[in-house]
Image 1 (cartoon, rainbow, N blue to C red):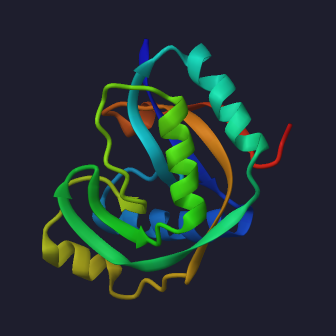
Image 2 (cartoon, rainbow, N blue to C red):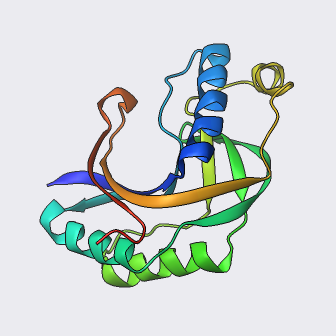
Length: 168
């Protein structure tokens, strides 16, 4: 068994805009770039064969949706050091609740919807200098859901299953 995360993936235009921001910040902060996403669940230590049918069913019943961007935030964790807080709207909360009810796990996971911009430990001055001219879009559009093999090394992250919303 491996550790997997469930990610919401961005629609093409949103993905392009946010990927540019992540690339710019990764250069400025000397961090590793990654694909923009919103984590629904992380560190699922389970058999992939049990999760794929669940994610497939979730994708079939959903359509693309947008959420409002709240604000840029910082944290003290390597995995939540520079991120964009987003509105936990009805569609997002419904998706999380559905996944939680179907993926029964004993691991506690607090759902705090956000889009990470950089992973690592950075001082306040570095973050301020890196972000001072960043213009944030007002919305994020999500169009799919993925299962990603994750771990401590960002370079080894791998999408192992993906479905666009509404795809049969």
